[in-house]
Image (cartoon, rainbow over all chains, first blue to last red; front, side):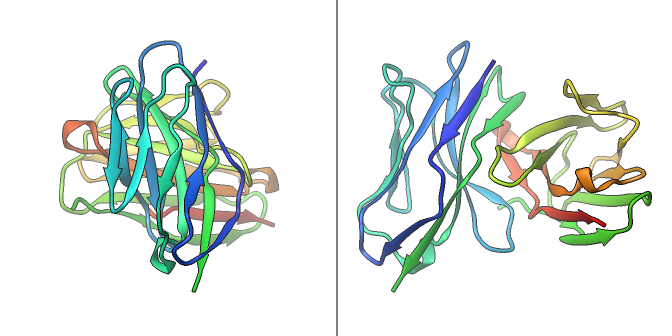
Length: 112
Length: 114
């Protein structure tokens, strides 16, 4: 079945450091891939998405490229800020978004 | 953007009691809502899909008599954990489907059963 695996946290970085959070997936078809972010005390929010191979999703300085050959969708940001501290979830969905499969979440702590 | 309100955010209860969690879409109508559960260091797992006016569809391995889902209106779905036990302690989160297939999430409920 479909599944998502992402790196365990927490990840602790200094401000302006480079961020990578790894995400790999298993899917039977051609899924859309997503990154969601959860700030403290809030619900998950869509950060970015990609719907087909080689697409790059981007938002707020974050990027992720849909790599079909490596079944990956790693999240990157060139220079993190304290305000980026949150939990990040990688997810996939097939069949017109009827079902979403999430990774376990990676907590990011950014220190000033 | 669209907002989903989930209440309560944290609940502690005694073993054997029932707990109700509410999920409301505040500024849009949601014919479909989803309930997820997350154990520590594990993935968010879909428990059930809730459709307004009809019975919920449960994922394999989820006890429908234990996790009662009601979606009586286009803006409210409830999850009731009946006769809760310590193994039901978990993080529960709801989401509502909006336009273009987008999901909008509540902030989650941490349930602790003593």
